[in-house]
Image (cartoon, rainbow, N blue to C red; front, side, top):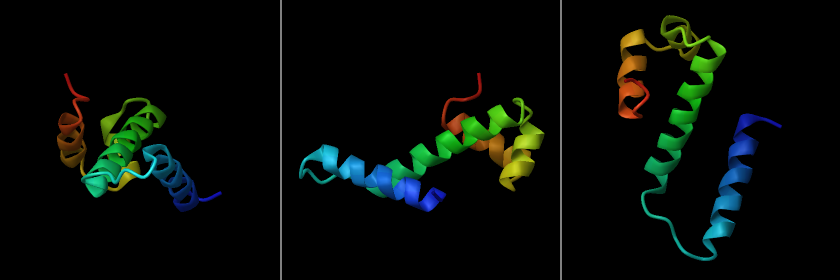
Length: 75
C-alpha cells in the first residue's frame, strides 16, 4: 500500500471517530502531525545526524533545525 492510501485510511478512521462532528483547522492539524512524524522518523533513520536527515528530506540543515524547534525537538 502506498503512502497516499495509508494516509487516506487514517483520515477515514479519524472522521469515523469524530462521529459526525466536523474538525476545525484540519489542514494545519494534518500537515503538522505528518511533518512532526516525518522529522522524527527521518532523524531516527539517519542516526540523529541532522545533516544526513536534511539531505534525505531534501531541505537545508537550517530549515530542518527551524522545523525541529517548532515541534520542540531541540533542547
